[in-house]
Image (cartoon, rainbow, N blue to C red; front, side):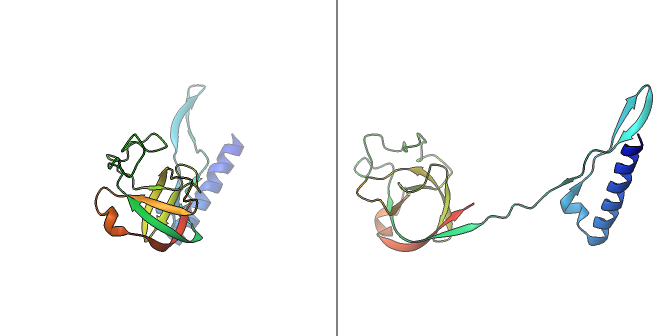
Length: 152
């Protein structure tokens, strides 16, 4: 019981210090739940959960050749248009998709300031190429050499 009071006391001091710094609202949540033990109500202060803000890191992997394709065009895909190698229907998906053989499925990358997710594969002839899935404007995109970043 004394340990619980001491813990609550220390959390209170920590909370007051963070209020002074103006960080309590964003980074600290303390919940106090009323409970009963042996018929007597008491307050139990759980550990403080300090939320560490998620910082997205971008790792530069180089200037790569970037092309575009239309996933609904059977002439630009294999025998199953719109179905990616990861078995996703990328014609109706809200996620911007890129095809590459270099990264695992689900990897988020940034090309030309836009974030894409690796959901498709390419022909083995193009080992260092990134192919953007575009329903419109793929032919106008052409071939570009752009910086590519992995978003972690």
